[in-house]
Length: 100
Image (cartoon, helix red, strand yellow):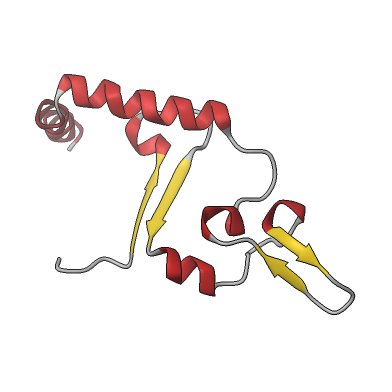
């Protein structure tokens, strides 16, 4: 495709534990969207009348970061890269043939 608005990936698709995932997109799109779960970690300033949200990834990053999940996700990508994605795909297709 010539243009993608977003790229999303979930760690379990790369054999990673701990529920890590990511959503990659244009920062302007993220900055225009209200935080899904507004919280202390997403706000830069609160007045009596309004809350002002951070920009960039912090605008949508609430709660405790999944550090272990992020490290495991990165390691799983390295693992698959070292094997070679073509070999992984070939093996998965062979397994599919056996299962069908």
